Image (cartoon, rainbow, N blue to C red; front, side):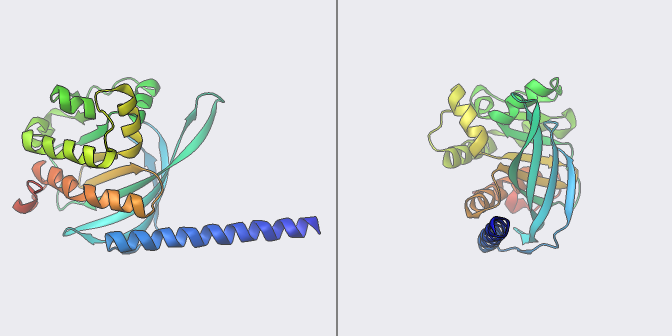
Length: 237
């Protein structure tokens, strides 16, 4: 009898989890106006050196570009126990009509950057922009990217305003502020023919609203990086 009751409880928990997940996907669809994806899966390694698996939840056209919303599970070491644990991320990815000139990654100063420094040697692609911007974002780029042309004063102001809007009053100049912002802000990345924004947290309405707000900035960066985008995206109003 106890075994049967346990199975019933387990089945009810699975059903509830399925219903909650379906509701979250429906909320993301409503925010992003994308269709259900074909469920294709992918795996790889993050720029920080962590292995990940991801599954496509939504797909379609957003701001005139093909877009996919991924649910990503990142596996990374658990230092205290010598084990591995997982974290969930929401990834909005655009396919560009042609490759950008060179890779670019704007990572909020915070948790992932600190972990990257612990796990591997510096990549040698760090770029200093200005003290205020460098306190908010860690910039990774190669010389061919032309990052100082992409991150002109106007775009830096837009990115700092976006940070303030999404992270609230967290001070970019303090260690606590940088640590917290690494959890509530996402990473902008351009690589080849893709542009992506990766945000900590599973796909729910709040993360969907966040990546939607980041999308115009992401495509503006891609346009400035030379993918041949519309002039209207050169700067976000």
